[in-house]
Length: 304
Image (tube, rainbow, N blue to C red; front, side, top):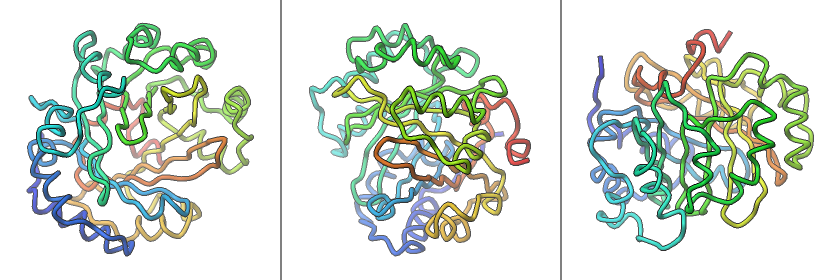
């Protein structure tokens, strides 16, 4: 059964989380974004997000995930003054995909100071979309087509979802529901070598091997894949590793949750510009998101 949350409670969770990390929060900006996307924030899954690194640890995001109602996130952001309509290919991609491919839901990313940042698009849970077909869109980064053969060597043929970042003009494409062994250490080593990313440490490889998915970041400015990220889902914050950095440990220990579901995703990001970790606690978890992420196992099994 789908459960909802109150908008004021979502804001309070964001405010409390920012205070936990001593981060400045622009209250009017956050409240305005929540109000503009109220149906999504009160009826979809809601998560908070932080990452390690000197610059990234000064930021905190909040997001709704897989809203299935009648809301166009791009047009809503523009009409509410959260995003300026642009003429970059990134501004056309959401609608281009929506016109040609089936969509099961959307998501939105926001930052407590910068505001609206990103739109997520979920393809039907049972029908990931062929990457070679997506790559033919004129608004898709050329880097996607340029890397089709590389990704195919790792069994990555169909995308489950993607996310467009309107602040950095980058694109994340997600692959999940993959066979066991896809993220075995040697396979991840091979992948990073092909991507021109320094070989991960043994510990990073150990974390990547637990991932339920992988996503890659593409740009319209280069044919190279910028980074690869390996997310792991755990049923409660106590199962987040304690050696991912003091900020993540502090956030996992103190972040609020709306109910008994206290699931979190932690992720290892591999990049030529330096590796880092992310943490995404689900303030409000909707069971339907399990299908949206095409998890082959339950969160409890993934934590084992």
